[in-house]
Picture 1 (tube, helix red, strand yellow):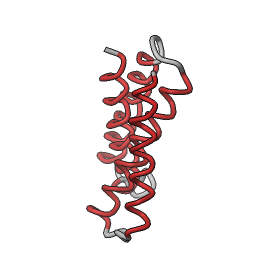
Picture 2: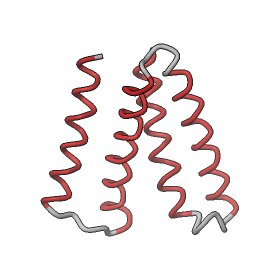
Picture 3: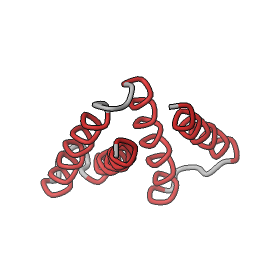
Picture 4: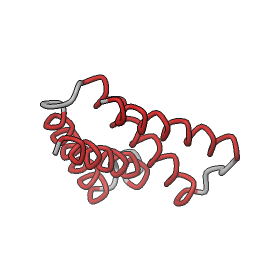
Length: 104
C-alpha cells in the first residue's frame, strides 16, 4: 500500500506545483486554496508512505514524479518548450523512478 500512496503523493505534488502558476503568486483565493490543499494532501501521503519505505527512496520518487509531471504539464498547459533534449532528460528521471522502485 505504500507505493500507491507514494504515487498519489507525487501526483498531488504535481497538482500543487501547477497550482502555483494558476494562483499567480498565491494572489487568487480559489487557486491558492486548491494549491494549499494539494500540498497538504501530498505531504500527508508522503509521510504515510515513508512509514514503510526508506526515506531516501520515497523522497527521490516523490520529487521525480513531481518533476516529470510538472515539466510535462508545463509543456502542455503553459506552452513551455518541448525540445528533444528536454524530453530526453524527463525520460532519464522516469528511468530513475522505475529503477528505484525495482530495487526497493
